[in-house]
Length: 141
Image (cartoon, rainbow, N blue to C red; front, side, top):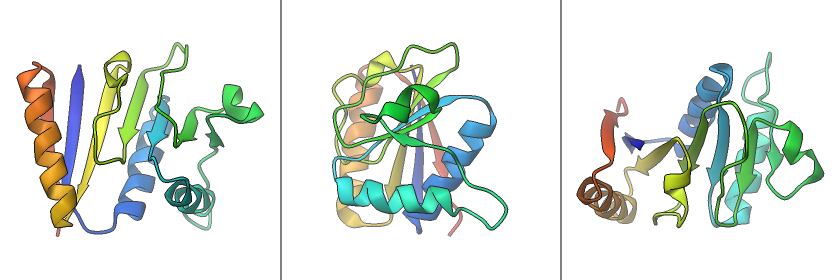
Protein backbone atom coordinates (compact mmCIF):
# COMPACT_ATOMS: atom_id res chain seq x y z
CA UNK A 1 0.00 0.00 0.00
CA UNK A 2 1.21 3.50 -0.81
CA UNK A 3 1.30 5.99 2.07
CA UNK A 4 2.20 9.62 1.45
CA UNK A 5 3.44 11.76 4.33
CA UNK A 6 3.16 15.52 3.96
CA UNK A 7 5.15 17.19 6.74
CA UNK A 8 6.05 20.69 7.93
CA UNK A 9 2.51 21.85 7.10
CA UNK A 10 1.94 25.38 8.43
CA UNK A 11 -1.78 25.81 7.60
CA UNK A 12 -3.29 22.36 7.93
CA UNK A 13 -6.81 23.36 6.88
CA UNK A 14 -5.77 25.08 3.67
CA UNK A 15 -3.31 22.30 2.84
CA UNK A 16 -5.97 19.63 3.35
CA UNK A 17 -8.40 21.48 1.11
CA UNK A 18 -5.81 21.67 -1.67
CA UNK A 19 -4.98 17.95 -1.37
CA UNK A 20 -8.67 17.02 -1.38
CA UNK A 21 -9.27 19.22 -4.43
CA UNK A 22 -6.34 17.63 -6.27
CA UNK A 23 -7.52 14.07 -5.48
CA UNK A 24 -11.13 14.95 -6.36
CA UNK A 25 -10.11 16.50 -9.69
CA UNK A 26 -8.12 13.34 -10.45
CA UNK A 27 -11.41 11.39 -10.10
CA UNK A 28 -10.51 9.59 -6.88
CA UNK A 29 -12.78 8.70 -3.97
CA UNK A 30 -11.53 10.39 -0.78
CA UNK A 31 -12.45 9.58 2.82
CA UNK A 32 -11.23 12.20 5.30
CA UNK A 33 -10.85 10.96 8.86
CA UNK A 34 -10.56 13.12 11.96
CA UNK A 35 -11.90 11.84 15.30
CA UNK A 36 -12.93 15.39 16.33
CA UNK A 37 -16.30 16.21 14.70
CA UNK A 38 -15.74 19.90 15.48
CA UNK A 39 -12.62 19.89 13.29
CA UNK A 40 -14.58 18.14 10.54
CA UNK A 41 -17.23 20.89 10.65
CA UNK A 42 -14.48 23.47 10.11
CA UNK A 43 -13.15 21.45 7.18
CA UNK A 44 -16.70 21.05 5.85
CA UNK A 45 -17.14 24.83 5.71
CA UNK A 46 -13.71 25.33 4.13
CA UNK A 47 -14.51 22.85 1.35
CA UNK A 48 -17.67 24.78 0.46
CA UNK A 49 -15.73 28.02 0.24
CA UNK A 50 -12.32 26.92 -1.04
CA UNK A 51 -12.34 29.81 -3.53
CA UNK A 52 -14.84 32.27 -4.96
CA UNK A 53 -15.19 30.23 -8.15
CA UNK A 54 -15.42 26.71 -6.76
CA UNK A 55 -16.37 24.37 -4.00
CA UNK A 56 -15.64 20.70 -3.46
CA UNK A 57 -18.83 18.65 -3.18
CA UNK A 58 -18.66 16.40 -0.13
CA UNK A 59 -20.81 14.75 2.52
CA UNK A 60 -20.65 13.25 5.94
CA UNK A 61 -19.99 9.51 5.67
CA UNK A 62 -23.11 8.77 7.72
CA UNK A 63 -25.46 11.00 5.69
CA UNK A 64 -27.97 10.02 3.00
CA UNK A 65 -25.86 11.95 0.45
CA UNK A 66 -22.77 9.83 1.14
CA UNK A 67 -23.55 7.36 -1.63
CA UNK A 68 -23.44 10.21 -4.17
CA UNK A 69 -20.28 11.91 -2.97
CA UNK A 70 -16.67 11.25 -3.94
CA UNK A 71 -15.48 13.10 -0.81
CA UNK A 72 -16.61 11.82 2.58
CA UNK A 73 -15.88 13.26 6.02
CA UNK A 74 -15.98 10.97 9.04
CA UNK A 75 -15.19 11.05 12.75
CA UNK A 76 -15.83 7.29 13.01
CA UNK A 77 -13.26 4.67 12.10
CA UNK A 78 -13.09 4.92 8.30
CA UNK A 79 -13.94 2.07 5.96
CA UNK A 80 -13.55 2.18 2.19
CA UNK A 81 -16.59 2.57 -0.03
CA UNK A 82 -17.17 0.16 -2.89
CA UNK A 83 -16.22 2.19 -5.96
CA UNK A 84 -14.45 1.84 -9.26
CA UNK A 85 -12.35 4.90 -8.37
CA UNK A 86 -9.09 4.82 -6.43
CA UNK A 87 -10.02 4.91 -2.75
CA UNK A 88 -7.85 7.30 -0.74
CA UNK A 89 -7.86 7.78 3.02
CA UNK A 90 -6.76 11.19 4.26
CA UNK A 91 -5.82 10.60 7.90
CA UNK A 92 -5.97 13.76 10.00
CA UNK A 93 -5.81 11.93 13.32
CA UNK A 94 -2.69 11.31 15.39
CA UNK A 95 -3.06 7.55 15.25
CA UNK A 96 -3.34 4.81 12.67
CA UNK A 97 -6.93 4.00 11.69
CA UNK A 98 -7.71 0.32 12.23
CA UNK A 99 -8.78 -0.50 8.65
CA UNK A 100 -6.40 1.82 6.76
CA UNK A 101 -4.94 -1.04 4.72
CA UNK A 102 -8.31 -1.62 3.04
CA UNK A 103 -7.84 1.64 1.13
CA UNK A 104 -5.75 1.77 -2.04
CA UNK A 105 -3.73 4.68 -0.70
CA UNK A 106 -3.41 6.81 2.43
CA UNK A 107 -2.23 10.37 2.97
CA UNK A 108 -0.92 11.57 6.33
CA UNK A 109 -0.67 15.29 7.14
CA UNK A 110 1.89 16.32 9.77
CA UNK A 111 1.88 19.93 10.95
CA UNK A 112 4.68 21.82 12.66
CA UNK A 113 3.21 21.08 16.11
CA UNK A 114 5.62 19.02 18.25
CA UNK A 115 2.95 16.50 19.34
CA UNK A 116 1.87 16.08 15.72
CA UNK A 117 5.49 15.59 14.59
CA UNK A 118 6.12 12.99 17.31
CA UNK A 119 2.92 11.06 16.44
CA UNK A 120 3.71 11.31 12.71
CA UNK A 121 7.19 9.86 13.20
CA UNK A 122 5.75 6.99 15.21
CA UNK A 123 3.18 6.20 12.49
CA UNK A 124 5.89 6.46 9.80
CA UNK A 125 8.05 3.89 11.62
CA UNK A 126 5.05 1.62 12.10
CA UNK A 127 4.18 1.71 8.37
CA UNK A 128 7.84 1.26 7.43
CA UNK A 129 8.18 -1.81 9.64
CA UNK A 130 5.01 -3.23 8.06
CA UNK A 131 6.55 -2.91 4.60
CA UNK A 132 4.29 -0.21 3.13
CA UNK A 133 5.47 1.93 0.22
CA UNK A 134 6.25 5.29 1.85
CA UNK A 135 6.64 8.67 0.16
CA UNK A 136 7.55 11.89 1.94
CA UNK A 137 6.69 15.41 0.83
CA UNK A 138 8.02 18.45 2.64
CA UNK A 139 5.57 21.37 2.58
CA UNK A 140 7.10 24.70 1.65
CA UNK A 141 7.78 26.87 4.68
